[in-house]
Length: 264
Image 1 (tube, rainbow, N blue to C red):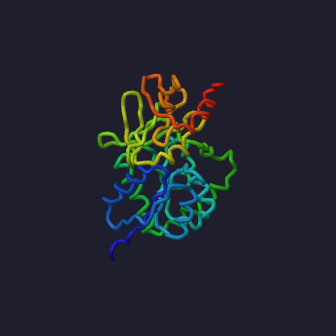
Image 2: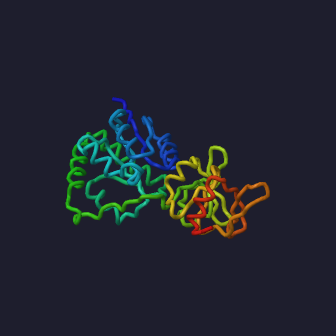
Image 3: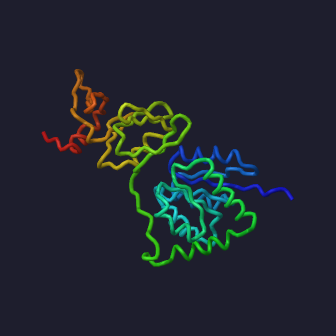
């Protein structure tokens, strides 16, 4: 009997993370990526409509967390699930007890293969129902039984690819972000990392108390701003503490002044 073709859903709010999982799955036999989702609400809809055999589910996404996705779908109706997270193993003992596998970012190829083989075996042996029943029990345990996953309102780290490897850049290291076609460029000290992500998405996911979109093509960390500039002709700009000068949209000037506590 030929091996079962496994239909996979990849649910992660980071485009680079989705692409990496898809690339790794391309090396596995009898696997097809049935769809992707970038928010918890999209993941819920995709699970219901696509009915995948396996879902890679980011623990924290906008709209719904990974556990909230499971709770809304119902663990008894969930496909085999591999959680993807930036948390360390200590924070994931709940998933261990539920016999659900997980990947901690950044993960290597071997760890991915191990998790996928475990999921494939579970699917082929039709053990998904048993595992998800344990997950359902876990979700309704008292809060003292297992530490809840920390709630993340805004991005704390961004995955970037550098020299063939995926690394995690803490957002507090980012000085500013600029747009370059389909890419966004993270400026971290004297280094620049390109990621395939829209500026609008980054603007929505970054803490507005820390970052500010000064122009359609630039987002700046507020504490990196040194001077507001007014150029001849009425154009505006900002000078950062490292000397970089960036354009400031006229319509954003007053709000930026408020953010910086500048009064007239």
